[in-house]
Every structure is written in C-alpha cells, then in structure tokens.
Image (cartoon, rainbow, N blue to C red):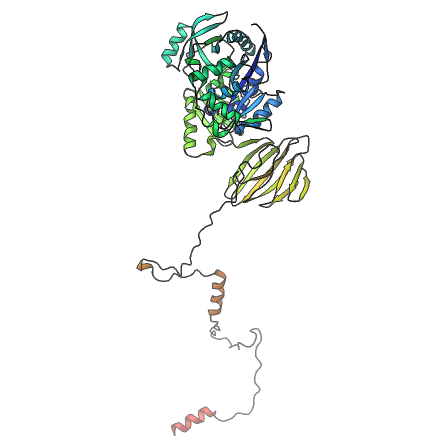
Length: 572
C-alpha cells in the first residue's frame, strides 16, 4: 500500500432477529443482547477490529432504527467508543441504501475504506479477522470491492456461497460467481469440490468505488439517499435522515445491488469462527456444552436430556427425556422446537403479527434512555410495572389523560415533581399522582432506583402520554390527545319496555328490595292469641302471664240478670 489507509467501520444494526424469538424481538433484537459473552453482539462487532495491522482505524458509523437509537448509543458509551455518526433510518430499506448513506458521509475522501459489517454476527477468532481485513485492504486499494468468504465446515443450506476465481495477490481471489442458498445435495457437492466459501455479508470497499458501482447498477438509490441526507437533521448525538425522502429510496441488498453485478468483486477466504447466529441451533453451537451436548441457561433442571438448548429467563424449567430440542422460556412466551425445524420460528412470528399479538414485537421489559420498565400484571383498568431508573437519569416532564399512578420506591432515592411540588421519596415511601397531573421522576443517587408503579383508570395504554419537557429530545413525540372512552349503554327499565312478542306483553314484576319486602311481611302478619288449653285458667291478655288476676268481692246474690228476665217476658 502506498500509504496507511484510513478505515471506517460501518455497522448495520437494523435487523429484528425474528428467528431467535421469543428472546429476540423487534423492540430489543438479538444484536443488542449478550448471547455469546458478557457483551452484546453489537458491542463485540464495534470492538472487533481494534487496531488492524497497517490500517488507521477510525470511529465507526452506525446505522440503526428509531427504536434502538438510545440503546445503541448507551452500549457504545459503555465501551468508551465515540462514534463518528449514529444515523437513524426512518424505515428499513435493506443494506445497500444504509451503506450508501455512510459512503455519502465520507464522500470527501473517496480513497478511504469502508468495512461494512452486520451488527449481529459472532466471531470467535478476532485476530484471524483482523489479518483478513489487512489483506483485503491491499486488494481494495487496488480497485476492488472485497467480500470475506467464510470457510465452510458443513454442507449448510442456510447461507449463500461464493465461488473463487483467479488469484489476486497472496490471499485474495476474484469472484467467479455468487450462488444463492443451495439445497442439501448441492451444498454437499460444493464442500466436496472445494473452492466455495460461505457468503458472510461483510464487505471492504473504497468509498468512491462503492458509490460509483452502486450508481451504475442501481441509479435511483444514490440520488435518493443524497436527498435524504441533505434534508436530514441533527438530533442530540444522532443524525436523522429525512423520512419523506428516504421512503423513496428503493430497497436493495449490497449482494444484488453491487457485488453480483460488478466486475470488480474479490473474495478473501477466512476461518475465524464465524456465525450469523441466525437460529437457535446456530446459537447452541456458539455456547458451551456439557458432556451430553446440552446448554442450560437459567434455573433449569434436566433428566435424560441430550444435545438440547434450554434457556429460562425467569421461572424454574424442568425437562425430561429430550433430545435435539430447543426450549426457551421468557416472562411472557415459551418456545419448544425440534432443532431440525428451528428455521420455522420466523413463521410463528408472522402468525403472531397477523393476529395482532404484541408478543411478536414487544417484550415484557421495555428499554428507555433513562432505564427500563417491565410489566408485572395487567387487566381491565389497571397495570402494574416495575421501573428502573439509572443513576443521574430523569424521565420526561409529562402527564396522562386517562390514568392515575401510585409510585412505591423499593430501593434507591427518587425526586418527584408533582404539579407545583417537588419532594424526595426514599425506600418504602410512596406517592399518588391523579390523572392529568404534570409529573416527573428523577434519580439523584449513585445507585439505580427501583420502584413499583400501579396504574388505574379507564385507559392504561403506553400511548396515553403528553411529554412537556424531555432530556432526550422526545418532547412532542407521540403526544396523546384525550380519548373518547366508550361508556356502557344505559339499559331501560324492563317495566317500560314493550315487547314485540304477544306472549311477553304483560308487565314484568319489579324485583323487590329484600329489606323492604321483609318490612311489608311484618305489617301484614296478624297476631292472634293462642287457644285456651283444657283445665287451664283463662288469662287476660292485658295482664302479665305470670300474675293471677285478683278475685272479685262477693256481694249479696241478686235475681236473674236482665237478659234472663227479658227472655222470660218474651216467652210469656
């Protein structure tokens, strides 16, 4: 090489990783998760190049989507990496436009090199990768677009293949042809013949050459990306492409848009322990195994199990007698699959989307720039969340139209803004926020703040939020208006309703109140004195039953009574 080449890593982080559902979903895909080490796949990709031999490695350009921008920035910050740019795609348009945007950012130095890498691949031997990049840089500076051919170790049908052509230097070859994913017999033949490598989707290109070849083969992509870049804007430490212009960009891959249609394609074969982690079987191969070929992650109990991958994120999972089985348990979904059919997981995700199920795209734990929250329970008119706020972080100043919130601090210290008040909450203290109250939550401490939030109201959806002020540039983003909540219809009194059917024309009796009915029964009850018993003296009802009435004084005997005299007269 005539001079030390400047090399800009370009990391494409727009995938959803649906074949690793339910662990990987659109809101938190596999590249943002630590699957093969204590770092995420994105972090491993950003740190992989290090200081390559003979290359002046520059800060990376990362292209990601709207939902992942803060997580991407946070993960790079954790590594101490300051990116040259984090570009936000308003929508996915495949790899060729994403790489085109990065090339346009570097257009001032057309001789600089771009190393285009997916963010969700695993490389077990980074040193071998760096050696291959150094060899590819020499070929690229001589006017080639270089791809990296992964040395195959099995007749895989999940990858495309590259047929090597004439030799170019010590390690590189011209590309004779690209082959789409073959069937099993063809893949076995490729492996037997030799000269074929897997297409790993990693490219090393001079900036100017990539743009010229893309413009020659796909003339609409470059000018459309240029307009999206020109009308874009900075947003905090991100750059947003213009949504309207980027929507006009044709969707195309680098493979078909450039590599398969150029006469300047070259390949550098490399054996670096590469995997695209594109299925549960592939992930199983990248993780440690026990003597029976099993990988157990989490609280797992297994008996008579072999060659299986069992992962649980929460509860105890017990398995018995499994062989070549995938078991993945998350808080809201469980996957059980035969390893031979794990490519069909994507079809499960498509069916869930067709049914409108949130499990297809969202996880129970949702990440935000200030931390995360996790749904614990939910039902009609209520939702319970666990909330974690990072040290020094602050939620937006906000309000909700339809729900009230009750906050209970579990660990840490919180500063709460509630209307005109601002006060501090410590462990085991709580506060109540009525619907419509402007509020904010901050963590002033050095440790994470954990709390429980109980929401209640006529609507508890995440879109019921109005952001008034926000440290992360989200003010006005997704602000809600008061919803018209449907109220239950009033039921008319059945006595007043006239039934169309003749048999039901008579009035329906109103159901009486039980207490009122009891009072009416008491009023209607007739109290009668008990019948006198033989041989017992008659007791006057006016006297207490335990007292005998006094005897009348005996006077002189009189004649017959008036009634008896009257009867006597009548007889006469």
